[in-house]
Length: 179
Image (tube, rainbow, N blue to C red; front, side):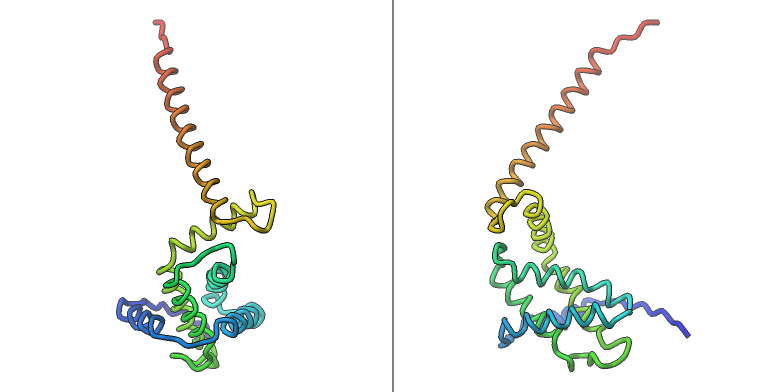
């Protein structure tokens, strides 16, 4: 028997997990990173639940952003991500991961909450990574390089819009109709 369940995450649940993630965690960052990498590898190889598979990419993006030496996270984001990674690697968290089908539900909720909270920074990091892969001819592509490229792209975009508007207004003036 296949069943589908929908869960709505209320503000109360979000606040509960935020409280967990903002309390002091004294975990070893290097060990936590290794543990989250092992967890991600296990998830990719052993889980077929759609809701779990959908959360692998966002978690990978957060981890990549965290470990990328060229991307500078704020202290608050660093602590928040480290707390989330620490929570995610605990087998006996709110819903023990060993419970079939629903064991990773709380972990997926945490991933969603963290991704929402740092969405802007994740979006910027994704843009930086794409820019680095296109423009960066060396592995030391920095955020300063990215900022310069974004300014150039912004100026070019404004210039193109202005030229298009001018071209359109000229074509409107030069139209002549004969009846």
